[in-house]
Length: 548
Picture 1 (cartoon, rainbow, N blue to C red):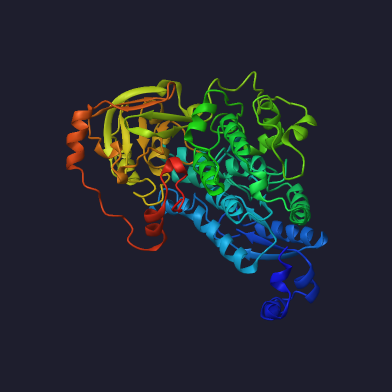
Picture 2: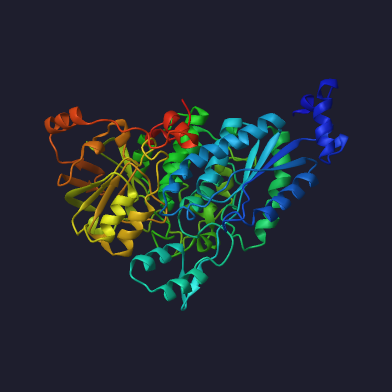
Protein backbone atom coordinates (compact mmCIF):
# COMPACT_ATOMS: atom_id res chain seq x y z
CA UNK A 1 0.00 0.00 0.00
CA UNK A 2 1.18 3.54 -0.73
CA UNK A 3 -0.01 5.10 2.55
CA UNK A 4 3.48 6.33 3.42
CA UNK A 5 3.33 8.42 0.24
CA UNK A 6 0.22 10.21 1.56
CA UNK A 7 0.98 10.44 5.29
CA UNK A 8 3.42 12.50 7.27
CA UNK A 9 4.33 16.19 7.21
CA UNK A 10 6.20 16.05 3.92
CA UNK A 11 3.10 14.72 2.16
CA UNK A 12 1.03 17.76 3.14
CA UNK A 13 1.31 19.32 -0.31
CA UNK A 14 0.06 16.06 -1.88
CA UNK A 15 -2.91 15.87 0.46
CA UNK A 16 -3.77 19.50 -0.26
CA UNK A 17 -4.00 18.77 -3.97
CA UNK A 18 -6.19 15.72 -3.44
CA UNK A 19 -8.45 17.56 -1.01
CA UNK A 20 -8.79 20.40 -3.49
CA UNK A 21 -9.89 17.79 -6.04
CA UNK A 22 -12.67 16.64 -3.70
CA UNK A 23 -11.19 13.68 -1.78
CA UNK A 24 -11.57 13.46 2.01
CA UNK A 25 -8.73 13.14 4.49
CA UNK A 26 -9.77 9.55 5.22
CA UNK A 27 -9.82 8.73 1.49
CA UNK A 28 -6.33 10.09 1.08
CA UNK A 29 -4.67 8.65 4.17
CA UNK A 30 -6.32 5.30 4.81
CA UNK A 31 -7.75 3.76 1.64
CA UNK A 32 -6.08 2.07 -1.34
CA UNK A 33 -5.83 4.42 -4.32
CA UNK A 34 -6.85 2.78 -7.60
CA UNK A 35 -5.95 4.49 -10.86
CA UNK A 36 -8.65 4.28 -13.54
CA UNK A 37 -6.99 5.05 -16.90
CA UNK A 38 -9.84 5.55 -19.37
CA UNK A 39 -9.30 5.50 -23.14
CA UNK A 40 -12.59 7.29 -23.77
CA UNK A 41 -12.70 9.47 -26.87
CA UNK A 42 -15.67 10.69 -28.84
CA UNK A 43 -14.44 9.87 -32.34
CA UNK A 44 -14.79 6.07 -32.38
CA UNK A 45 -17.51 3.54 -31.52
CA UNK A 46 -14.89 1.45 -29.72
CA UNK A 47 -14.27 4.17 -27.14
CA UNK A 48 -17.20 6.62 -27.20
CA UNK A 49 -19.12 4.55 -24.61
CA UNK A 50 -16.32 4.11 -22.08
CA UNK A 51 -17.37 6.95 -19.76
CA UNK A 52 -20.34 4.92 -18.58
CA UNK A 53 -18.17 1.85 -18.08
CA UNK A 54 -15.66 3.94 -16.11
CA UNK A 55 -18.44 5.19 -13.83
CA UNK A 56 -19.47 1.60 -13.10
CA UNK A 57 -15.85 0.65 -12.35
CA UNK A 58 -15.51 3.58 -9.94
CA UNK A 59 -18.74 2.66 -8.18
CA UNK A 60 -17.31 -0.79 -7.57
CA UNK A 61 -14.04 0.60 -6.23
CA UNK A 62 -15.83 2.95 -3.82
CA UNK A 63 -18.12 0.12 -2.71
CA UNK A 64 -15.15 -2.11 -1.87
CA UNK A 65 -13.45 0.60 0.18
CA UNK A 66 -11.03 1.93 -2.40
CA UNK A 67 -10.52 5.38 -3.87
CA UNK A 68 -10.79 5.61 -7.67
CA UNK A 69 -8.79 8.24 -9.54
CA UNK A 70 -9.83 8.41 -13.18
CA UNK A 71 -7.55 9.88 -15.82
CA UNK A 72 -7.50 9.92 -19.59
CA UNK A 73 -5.14 8.05 -21.89
CA UNK A 74 -4.78 8.39 -25.68
CA UNK A 75 -7.14 6.47 -27.92
CA UNK A 76 -7.56 6.17 -31.65
CA UNK A 77 -9.38 3.88 -34.06
CA UNK A 78 -7.42 2.19 -36.83
CA UNK A 79 -10.32 2.66 -39.21
CA UNK A 80 -10.09 6.44 -38.91
CA UNK A 81 -6.63 6.32 -40.52
CA UNK A 82 -7.47 3.38 -42.80
CA UNK A 83 -5.66 3.90 -46.09
CA UNK A 84 -3.91 7.06 -44.89
CA UNK A 85 -0.25 7.56 -44.10
CA UNK A 86 -1.22 8.30 -40.50
CA UNK A 87 -2.02 4.62 -39.96
CA UNK A 88 1.66 4.12 -39.09
CA UNK A 89 0.98 5.86 -35.76
CA UNK A 90 -1.08 2.90 -34.55
CA UNK A 91 1.76 0.62 -33.41
CA UNK A 92 3.63 3.57 -31.93
CA UNK A 93 0.41 4.35 -30.07
CA UNK A 94 0.70 1.13 -28.09
CA UNK A 95 3.91 2.35 -26.49
CA UNK A 96 2.57 5.87 -26.00
CA UNK A 97 -0.44 4.47 -24.13
CA UNK A 98 1.83 2.36 -21.92
CA UNK A 99 4.01 5.38 -21.19
CA UNK A 100 0.97 7.54 -20.42
CA UNK A 101 -0.30 5.04 -17.85
CA UNK A 102 3.22 4.65 -16.46
CA UNK A 103 3.67 8.43 -16.11
CA UNK A 104 0.48 9.14 -14.16
CA UNK A 105 0.70 5.97 -12.07
CA UNK A 106 4.25 6.66 -10.94
CA UNK A 107 3.47 10.26 -9.97
CA UNK A 108 0.32 9.31 -8.03
CA UNK A 109 1.83 6.13 -6.61
CA UNK A 110 -1.38 4.16 -7.15
CA UNK A 111 -1.84 0.89 -5.28
CA UNK A 112 -3.58 -0.68 -8.28
CA UNK A 113 -5.05 -0.03 -11.70
CA UNK A 114 -8.29 -0.71 -13.55
CA UNK A 115 -7.71 0.27 -17.18
CA UNK A 116 -10.60 0.68 -19.61
CA UNK A 117 -10.01 0.07 -23.30
CA UNK A 118 -11.44 -1.63 -26.38
CA UNK A 119 -9.39 -1.22 -29.49
CA UNK A 120 -6.27 -2.55 -31.15
CA UNK A 121 -3.05 -1.07 -29.86
CA UNK A 122 -4.78 0.87 -27.08
CA UNK A 123 -5.73 -2.24 -25.14
CA UNK A 124 -2.34 -3.78 -25.95
CA UNK A 125 -0.73 -0.65 -24.49
CA UNK A 126 -2.73 -1.14 -21.29
CA UNK A 127 -1.45 -4.71 -20.96
CA UNK A 128 2.09 -3.47 -21.56
CA UNK A 129 1.64 -0.85 -18.83
CA UNK A 130 0.47 -3.50 -16.39
CA UNK A 131 3.55 -5.60 -17.09
CA UNK A 132 5.87 -2.62 -16.75
CA UNK A 133 4.42 -1.13 -13.57
CA UNK A 134 3.86 -4.50 -11.87
CA UNK A 135 1.19 -3.36 -9.43
CA UNK A 136 -2.16 -5.18 -9.07
CA UNK A 137 -3.85 -4.42 -12.38
CA UNK A 138 -6.97 -5.20 -14.37
CA UNK A 139 -8.41 -4.20 -17.71
CA UNK A 140 -12.13 -3.78 -18.37
CA UNK A 141 -12.87 -4.18 -22.06
CA UNK A 142 -15.39 -2.14 -24.02
CA UNK A 143 -16.70 -5.26 -25.75
CA UNK A 144 -17.73 -5.90 -29.33
CA UNK A 145 -20.26 -3.99 -31.42
CA UNK A 146 -23.29 -5.68 -32.92
CA UNK A 147 -23.05 -6.63 -36.61
CA UNK A 148 -24.92 -4.44 -39.05
CA UNK A 149 -27.77 -5.65 -41.25
CA UNK A 150 -28.47 -4.72 -44.85
CA UNK A 151 -31.12 -6.27 -47.09
CA UNK A 152 -31.66 -9.10 -44.61
CA UNK A 153 -27.95 -9.97 -44.38
CA UNK A 154 -25.55 -9.44 -41.48
CA UNK A 155 -22.63 -7.21 -42.47
CA UNK A 156 -19.41 -6.00 -40.85
CA UNK A 157 -17.04 -3.13 -41.54
CA UNK A 158 -14.96 -5.18 -43.98
CA UNK A 159 -17.99 -5.50 -46.29
CA UNK A 160 -17.79 -1.76 -46.87
CA UNK A 161 -14.25 -2.11 -48.24
CA UNK A 162 -15.26 -4.91 -50.57
CA UNK A 163 -18.14 -2.83 -51.92
CA UNK A 164 -15.91 0.22 -52.31
CA UNK A 165 -13.44 -1.56 -54.60
CA UNK A 166 -15.98 -3.64 -56.47
CA UNK A 167 -17.45 -0.62 -58.25
CA UNK A 168 -20.54 -0.18 -56.10
CA UNK A 169 -22.29 3.10 -56.68
CA UNK A 170 -22.28 5.96 -54.21
CA UNK A 171 -25.92 5.37 -53.30
CA UNK A 172 -25.21 1.74 -52.35
CA UNK A 173 -22.16 2.77 -50.30
CA UNK A 174 -24.30 5.33 -48.47
CA UNK A 175 -26.75 2.56 -47.56
CA UNK A 176 -23.93 0.38 -46.21
CA UNK A 177 -22.44 3.28 -44.25
CA UNK A 178 -25.76 3.76 -42.47
CA UNK A 179 -26.03 0.07 -41.58
CA UNK A 180 -22.57 -1.41 -41.09
CA UNK A 181 -21.69 -0.19 -37.56
CA UNK A 182 -24.95 -0.02 -35.57
CA UNK A 183 -23.64 0.12 -31.98
CA UNK A 184 -20.74 1.01 -29.74
CA UNK A 185 -17.90 -1.50 -29.35
CA UNK A 186 -15.02 -2.91 -31.35
CA UNK A 187 -15.74 -4.05 -34.92
CA UNK A 188 -17.13 -7.58 -34.46
CA UNK A 189 -14.61 -9.50 -36.60
CA UNK A 190 -11.48 -11.30 -35.42
CA UNK A 191 -9.45 -8.11 -35.69
CA UNK A 192 -6.77 -6.92 -33.32
CA UNK A 193 -9.24 -5.29 -30.93
CA UNK A 194 -11.25 -8.42 -30.21
CA UNK A 195 -8.17 -10.63 -30.32
CA UNK A 196 -6.53 -8.56 -27.60
CA UNK A 197 -9.73 -8.32 -25.56
CA UNK A 198 -9.93 -12.12 -25.56
CA UNK A 199 -6.24 -12.56 -24.75
CA UNK A 200 -6.68 -10.37 -21.68
CA UNK A 201 -8.52 -13.25 -20.00
CA UNK A 202 -5.60 -15.58 -20.74
CA UNK A 203 -3.09 -12.96 -19.50
CA UNK A 204 -4.98 -12.77 -16.16
CA UNK A 205 -5.65 -9.08 -16.74
CA UNK A 206 -9.38 -9.34 -17.62
CA UNK A 207 -11.96 -11.01 -15.37
CA UNK A 208 -12.79 -14.53 -16.62
CA UNK A 209 -15.72 -14.69 -19.03
CA UNK A 210 -16.11 -10.91 -19.37
CA UNK A 211 -13.87 -9.87 -22.28
CA UNK A 212 -16.35 -10.40 -25.09
CA UNK A 213 -19.58 -9.25 -23.46
CA UNK A 214 -21.01 -7.03 -26.24
CA UNK A 215 -21.02 -3.29 -25.65
CA UNK A 216 -24.79 -3.30 -26.16
CA UNK A 217 -25.39 -5.87 -23.39
CA UNK A 218 -25.92 -4.12 -20.04
CA UNK A 219 -24.19 -7.05 -18.41
CA UNK A 220 -21.07 -5.10 -19.43
CA UNK A 221 -21.92 -2.42 -16.86
CA UNK A 222 -22.65 -4.94 -14.11
CA UNK A 223 -19.37 -6.70 -14.75
CA UNK A 224 -17.50 -3.40 -14.84
CA UNK A 225 -18.78 -2.65 -11.36
CA UNK A 226 -17.80 -6.14 -10.26
CA UNK A 227 -14.32 -5.60 -11.69
CA UNK A 228 -13.94 -2.37 -9.74
CA UNK A 229 -14.82 -4.17 -6.53
CA UNK A 230 -12.45 -7.01 -7.29
CA UNK A 231 -9.59 -4.63 -8.06
CA UNK A 232 -9.54 -3.65 -4.38
CA UNK A 233 -9.32 -7.33 -3.47
CA UNK A 234 -6.41 -7.74 -5.89
CA UNK A 235 -4.59 -4.90 -4.14
CA UNK A 236 -5.21 -6.35 -0.70
CA UNK A 237 -4.02 -9.78 -1.89
CA UNK A 238 -0.97 -8.24 -3.59
CA UNK A 239 -1.51 -10.18 -6.84
CA UNK A 240 0.75 -8.43 -9.35
CA UNK A 241 1.25 -9.10 -13.07
CA UNK A 242 4.65 -10.66 -12.38
CA UNK A 243 2.87 -13.25 -10.20
CA UNK A 244 0.06 -13.85 -12.69
CA UNK A 245 1.74 -13.65 -16.11
CA UNK A 246 4.27 -16.47 -16.18
CA UNK A 247 6.01 -17.97 -19.19
CA UNK A 248 3.44 -20.77 -19.21
CA UNK A 249 0.61 -18.22 -19.21
CA UNK A 250 2.07 -16.60 -22.33
CA UNK A 251 2.47 -20.02 -23.95
CA UNK A 252 -1.21 -20.62 -23.21
CA UNK A 253 -1.91 -17.28 -24.89
CA UNK A 254 -0.04 -18.44 -27.99
CA UNK A 255 -2.08 -21.65 -28.09
CA UNK A 256 -5.30 -19.71 -27.61
CA UNK A 257 -4.36 -17.34 -30.44
CA UNK A 258 -3.66 -20.26 -32.76
CA UNK A 259 -7.03 -21.79 -31.90
CA UNK A 260 -9.08 -18.64 -32.53
CA UNK A 261 -7.06 -17.46 -35.59
CA UNK A 262 -6.44 -14.15 -33.89
CA UNK A 263 -5.01 -11.09 -35.55
CA UNK A 264 -1.39 -11.44 -36.65
CA UNK A 265 -0.70 -8.34 -34.53
CA UNK A 266 -1.10 -10.53 -31.44
CA UNK A 267 2.35 -11.94 -32.20
CA UNK A 268 3.88 -8.49 -31.67
CA UNK A 269 1.97 -7.91 -28.45
CA UNK A 270 2.63 -11.32 -26.86
CA UNK A 271 6.35 -11.03 -27.62
CA UNK A 272 6.46 -7.50 -26.21
CA UNK A 273 4.79 -8.69 -23.01
CA UNK A 274 7.42 -11.41 -22.71
CA UNK A 275 10.31 -8.98 -23.14
CA UNK A 276 8.78 -6.50 -20.69
CA UNK A 277 8.47 -9.24 -18.05
CA UNK A 278 11.86 -10.81 -18.81
CA UNK A 279 10.32 -14.11 -19.91
CA UNK A 280 11.90 -16.39 -22.49
CA UNK A 281 9.15 -16.51 -25.11
CA UNK A 282 10.18 -16.17 -28.75
CA UNK A 283 8.89 -16.59 -32.29
CA UNK A 284 10.05 -20.21 -32.09
CA UNK A 285 7.27 -20.86 -29.58
CA UNK A 286 4.73 -19.73 -32.18
CA UNK A 287 6.33 -22.13 -34.66
CA UNK A 288 6.10 -24.99 -32.16
CA UNK A 289 2.43 -24.54 -31.33
CA UNK A 290 1.44 -23.94 -34.94
CA UNK A 291 2.22 -27.64 -35.42
CA UNK A 292 -0.01 -28.65 -32.53
CA UNK A 293 -3.03 -26.32 -32.35
CA UNK A 294 -5.62 -26.14 -35.16
CA UNK A 295 -8.11 -23.34 -35.62
CA UNK A 296 -11.44 -24.09 -33.90
CA UNK A 297 -13.04 -20.65 -34.20
CA UNK A 298 -15.42 -19.72 -37.02
CA UNK A 299 -15.38 -15.94 -36.52
CA UNK A 300 -14.81 -13.68 -39.56
CA UNK A 301 -12.50 -13.91 -41.51
CA UNK A 302 -11.99 -17.62 -40.71
CA UNK A 303 -15.73 -18.30 -40.71
CA UNK A 304 -19.11 -16.59 -41.07
CA UNK A 305 -19.76 -15.59 -37.44
CA UNK A 306 -19.10 -12.47 -35.37
CA UNK A 307 -17.53 -11.97 -31.95
CA UNK A 308 -21.04 -11.40 -30.59
CA UNK A 309 -21.87 -14.94 -31.73
CA UNK A 310 -18.57 -16.10 -30.18
CA UNK A 311 -19.50 -14.65 -26.81
CA UNK A 312 -22.88 -16.33 -26.65
CA UNK A 313 -21.29 -19.59 -27.86
CA UNK A 314 -19.23 -19.74 -24.68
CA UNK A 315 -16.54 -17.15 -25.28
CA UNK A 316 -12.98 -17.43 -24.02
CA UNK A 317 -13.75 -20.00 -21.27
CA UNK A 318 -15.25 -22.39 -23.83
CA UNK A 319 -12.16 -22.14 -26.05
CA UNK A 320 -9.89 -22.77 -23.07
CA UNK A 321 -11.99 -25.81 -22.14
CA UNK A 322 -11.62 -27.15 -25.70
CA UNK A 323 -7.84 -26.75 -25.39
CA UNK A 324 -7.67 -28.22 -21.89
CA UNK A 325 -5.55 -31.22 -22.90
CA UNK A 326 -2.86 -28.93 -24.36
CA UNK A 327 -2.76 -26.04 -21.92
CA UNK A 328 -0.52 -25.48 -18.92
CA UNK A 329 -3.16 -25.84 -16.23
CA UNK A 330 -1.04 -25.36 -13.12
CA UNK A 331 -0.84 -21.63 -13.72
CA UNK A 332 -2.40 -18.94 -11.52
CA UNK A 333 -5.53 -16.96 -12.26
CA UNK A 334 -6.36 -13.51 -10.95
CA UNK A 335 -9.19 -15.04 -8.92
CA UNK A 336 -6.73 -16.95 -6.71
CA UNK A 337 -7.23 -20.42 -8.17
CA UNK A 338 -5.36 -22.27 -10.90
CA UNK A 339 -6.48 -22.53 -14.49
CA UNK A 340 -6.96 -26.26 -13.98
CA UNK A 341 -9.35 -25.65 -11.09
CA UNK A 342 -11.27 -23.11 -13.17
CA UNK A 343 -11.60 -25.49 -16.11
CA UNK A 344 -12.66 -28.38 -13.89
CA UNK A 345 -15.94 -26.56 -13.25
CA UNK A 346 -16.69 -26.06 -16.95
CA UNK A 347 -18.31 -28.35 -19.49
CA UNK A 348 -17.08 -28.27 -23.08
CA UNK A 349 -19.80 -27.03 -25.40
CA UNK A 350 -18.74 -27.48 -29.03
CA UNK A 351 -20.97 -25.65 -31.47
CA UNK A 352 -20.94 -24.12 -34.94
CA UNK A 353 -18.94 -21.11 -33.74
CA UNK A 354 -16.45 -22.78 -31.38
CA UNK A 355 -15.53 -26.27 -32.55
CA UNK A 356 -13.92 -28.99 -30.48
CA UNK A 357 -10.19 -29.63 -30.53
CA UNK A 358 -10.86 -33.13 -31.90
CA UNK A 359 -13.04 -31.83 -34.75
CA UNK A 360 -11.49 -28.45 -35.59
CA UNK A 361 -12.74 -25.96 -38.13
CA UNK A 362 -9.41 -26.20 -39.98
CA UNK A 363 -6.64 -28.76 -39.86
CA UNK A 364 -4.16 -25.90 -39.71
CA UNK A 365 -3.35 -23.22 -37.15
CA UNK A 366 -4.71 -19.70 -37.00
CA UNK A 367 -1.17 -18.29 -37.30
CA UNK A 368 2.02 -19.56 -38.84
CA UNK A 369 5.65 -18.48 -39.06
CA UNK A 370 7.26 -18.56 -42.50
CA UNK A 371 11.00 -18.59 -43.03
CA UNK A 372 13.37 -18.47 -45.96
CA UNK A 373 16.09 -16.30 -47.39
CA UNK A 374 13.72 -13.33 -47.69
CA UNK A 375 12.67 -13.71 -44.03
CA UNK A 376 15.47 -15.46 -42.11
CA UNK A 377 14.21 -14.03 -38.80
CA UNK A 378 10.63 -14.96 -39.64
CA UNK A 379 7.44 -13.70 -41.22
CA UNK A 380 3.79 -14.18 -40.23
CA UNK A 381 0.73 -15.43 -42.10
CA UNK A 382 -2.81 -16.36 -41.08
CA UNK A 383 -3.31 -19.70 -42.90
CA UNK A 384 -7.05 -19.85 -42.27
CA UNK A 385 -7.49 -16.66 -44.27
CA UNK A 386 -5.47 -17.87 -47.28
CA UNK A 387 -7.66 -19.16 -50.16
CA UNK A 388 -6.82 -22.69 -51.28
CA UNK A 389 -5.81 -21.42 -54.72
CA UNK A 390 -2.84 -19.52 -53.25
CA UNK A 391 -1.75 -21.57 -50.27
CA UNK A 392 1.27 -22.21 -52.49
CA UNK A 393 2.13 -19.56 -55.02
CA UNK A 394 5.25 -18.98 -57.09
CA UNK A 395 5.23 -15.78 -59.07
CA UNK A 396 7.16 -12.80 -60.34
CA UNK A 397 7.79 -9.93 -57.97
CA UNK A 398 6.36 -6.47 -58.46
CA UNK A 399 8.16 -4.24 -55.99
CA UNK A 400 6.89 -1.09 -54.26
CA UNK A 401 8.47 1.10 -51.60
CA UNK A 402 5.19 1.82 -49.87
CA UNK A 403 1.54 0.84 -49.53
CA UNK A 404 0.10 3.67 -51.64
CA UNK A 405 2.34 2.90 -54.62
CA UNK A 406 1.20 -0.73 -54.53
CA UNK A 407 -2.44 0.35 -54.21
CA UNK A 408 -2.18 2.61 -57.26
CA UNK A 409 -0.70 -0.27 -59.29
CA UNK A 410 -3.51 -2.60 -58.21
CA UNK A 411 -6.22 -0.05 -58.94
CA UNK A 412 -4.79 0.75 -62.39
CA UNK A 413 -4.70 -2.92 -63.44
CA UNK A 414 -0.93 -3.38 -63.34
CA UNK A 415 -1.24 -6.34 -60.96
CA UNK A 416 -2.40 -9.57 -62.57
CA UNK A 417 -2.98 -13.17 -61.53
CA UNK A 418 0.24 -14.91 -60.53
CA UNK A 419 2.05 -11.76 -59.37
CA UNK A 420 3.72 -11.49 -55.98
CA UNK A 421 3.51 -7.94 -54.64
CA UNK A 422 6.47 -6.86 -52.51
CA UNK A 423 5.87 -3.85 -50.25
CA UNK A 424 8.88 -2.67 -48.28
CA UNK A 425 10.16 0.22 -46.16
CA UNK A 426 6.94 0.00 -44.17
CA UNK A 427 8.41 -1.89 -41.18
CA UNK A 428 9.11 -0.77 -37.61
CA UNK A 429 11.87 1.62 -38.67
CA UNK A 430 11.01 2.07 -42.31
CA UNK A 431 7.44 3.40 -41.93
CA UNK A 432 8.26 4.21 -39.06
CA UNK A 433 5.78 2.30 -36.98
CA UNK A 434 5.13 -0.88 -38.98
CA UNK A 435 2.17 0.34 -40.98
CA UNK A 436 -0.95 -1.77 -41.56
CA UNK A 437 -1.41 -2.27 -45.32
CA UNK A 438 -5.10 -1.53 -45.53
CA UNK A 439 -5.04 0.20 -48.91
CA UNK A 440 -3.44 -2.51 -51.01
CA UNK A 441 -5.00 -5.50 -49.22
CA UNK A 442 -8.51 -4.06 -49.32
CA UNK A 443 -8.04 -3.35 -53.04
CA UNK A 444 -6.91 -6.94 -53.70
CA UNK A 445 -9.97 -8.29 -51.92
CA UNK A 446 -12.36 -5.81 -53.48
CA UNK A 447 -11.10 -6.61 -56.99
CA UNK A 448 -11.12 -10.37 -56.38
CA UNK A 449 -7.34 -10.70 -56.78
CA UNK A 450 -6.80 -12.25 -53.36
CA UNK A 451 -7.34 -15.72 -54.85
CA UNK A 452 -4.60 -15.34 -57.47
CA UNK A 453 -2.03 -12.83 -56.18
CA UNK A 454 0.43 -13.06 -53.30
CA UNK A 455 1.87 -10.28 -51.18
CA UNK A 456 4.89 -10.11 -48.88
CA UNK A 457 5.94 -7.16 -46.76
CA UNK A 458 7.89 -5.93 -43.76
CA UNK A 459 4.70 -4.17 -42.64
CA UNK A 460 1.70 -5.71 -40.90
CA UNK A 461 -2.02 -6.24 -41.56
CA UNK A 462 -5.35 -5.59 -39.98
CA UNK A 463 -7.04 -8.56 -38.37
CA UNK A 464 -9.85 -8.07 -40.91
CA UNK A 465 -7.57 -8.86 -43.86
CA UNK A 466 -7.29 -12.16 -45.69
CA UNK A 467 -5.50 -13.57 -48.72
CA UNK A 468 -2.00 -14.89 -49.46
CA UNK A 469 -0.52 -12.04 -47.47
CA UNK A 470 2.72 -12.50 -45.55
CA UNK A 471 3.86 -9.77 -43.15
CA UNK A 472 6.32 -8.94 -40.39
CA UNK A 473 9.27 -9.87 -42.65
CA UNK A 474 12.48 -9.59 -40.66
CA UNK A 475 15.05 -8.18 -41.05
CA UNK A 476 13.05 -5.32 -42.52
CA UNK A 477 14.15 -3.38 -45.59
CA UNK A 478 15.41 -0.37 -43.62
CA UNK A 479 17.81 -2.68 -41.75
CA UNK A 480 19.11 -4.07 -45.04
CA UNK A 481 17.03 -7.23 -45.02
CA UNK A 482 16.87 -9.30 -48.19
CA UNK A 483 13.46 -7.79 -48.93
CA UNK A 484 15.34 -4.55 -49.72
CA UNK A 485 17.23 -6.36 -52.51
CA UNK A 486 14.24 -7.76 -54.41
CA UNK A 487 13.86 -6.51 -58.00
CA UNK A 488 10.90 -6.55 -60.36
CA UNK A 489 10.68 -9.90 -62.13
CA UNK A 490 12.42 -11.95 -59.43
CA UNK A 491 10.58 -15.17 -58.62
CA UNK A 492 9.25 -15.62 -55.09
CA UNK A 493 7.73 -18.68 -53.43
CA UNK A 494 5.10 -18.22 -50.72
CA UNK A 495 4.21 -21.61 -49.27
CA UNK A 496 1.84 -21.30 -46.31
CA UNK A 497 1.50 -25.08 -46.11
CA UNK A 498 5.18 -25.79 -45.46
CA UNK A 499 6.08 -22.41 -43.95
CA UNK A 500 8.38 -21.12 -46.70
CA UNK A 501 9.07 -17.63 -48.04
CA UNK A 502 11.88 -17.78 -50.57
CA UNK A 503 13.38 -15.32 -53.05
CA UNK A 504 14.66 -17.39 -55.99
CA UNK A 505 17.87 -15.43 -56.44
CA UNK A 506 21.37 -16.81 -55.84
CA UNK A 507 23.48 -15.75 -52.87
CA UNK A 508 26.08 -14.44 -55.30
CA UNK A 509 23.59 -12.14 -56.99
CA UNK A 510 22.26 -10.94 -53.64
CA UNK A 511 25.81 -10.11 -52.57
CA UNK A 512 26.25 -7.94 -55.66
CA UNK A 513 22.97 -6.17 -55.00
CA UNK A 514 23.85 -5.61 -51.36
CA UNK A 515 27.04 -3.81 -52.30
CA UNK A 516 24.92 -1.32 -54.26
CA UNK A 517 22.22 -0.89 -51.63
CA UNK A 518 22.11 2.39 -49.71
CA UNK A 519 20.11 2.80 -46.50
CA UNK A 520 17.53 5.55 -47.04
CA UNK A 521 17.10 8.39 -44.53
CA UNK A 522 14.39 8.05 -41.90
CA UNK A 523 11.05 9.21 -43.25
CA UNK A 524 10.32 11.11 -40.04
CA UNK A 525 12.93 13.48 -38.64
CA UNK A 526 11.10 14.59 -35.49
CA UNK A 527 8.32 13.66 -33.12
CA UNK A 528 7.27 10.31 -31.70
CA UNK A 529 7.73 8.45 -34.99
CA UNK A 530 11.38 9.47 -35.10
CA UNK A 531 11.84 8.41 -31.49
CA UNK A 532 10.17 5.09 -32.24
CA UNK A 533 12.37 4.41 -35.28
CA UNK A 534 15.54 5.12 -33.29
CA UNK A 535 14.59 2.97 -30.29
CA UNK A 536 12.30 0.17 -31.46
CA UNK A 537 13.03 -3.53 -31.40
CA UNK A 538 12.61 -5.66 -34.56
CA UNK A 539 9.31 -7.36 -35.32
CA UNK A 540 10.42 -10.76 -34.02
CA UNK A 541 10.97 -9.11 -30.62
CA UNK A 542 7.60 -7.34 -30.59
CA UNK A 543 8.59 -4.03 -32.20
CA UNK A 544 8.38 -2.02 -28.96
CA UNK A 545 10.02 1.33 -28.32
CA UNK A 546 12.39 -0.08 -25.72
CA UNK A 547 16.20 -0.55 -25.71
CA UNK A 548 15.98 -4.00 -24.09
